[in-house]
Length: 68
Image 1 (cartoon, rainbow, N blue to C red):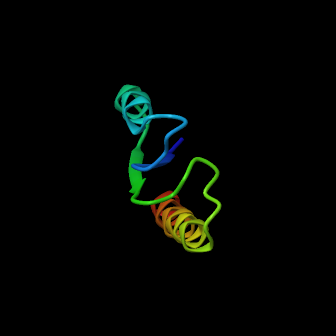
Image 2 (tube, rainbow, N blue to C red; image 1 turned 60 degrees about the vertical axis):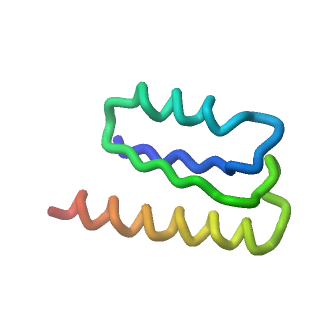
């Protein structure tokens, strides 16, 4: 099952390095996306929209792969 990991470089609650270590241990098809400015709760509208866009593109890509 494909996995998408999204984390922010600006997250002060959970360091991005923790997500990177988790990502590195995954053996499934995977993608890591680093937001630049989002806080832990992704409360800014622009950051939320960026997250939604990333998830949408990822879902489209994984659906195309599944149909092959």
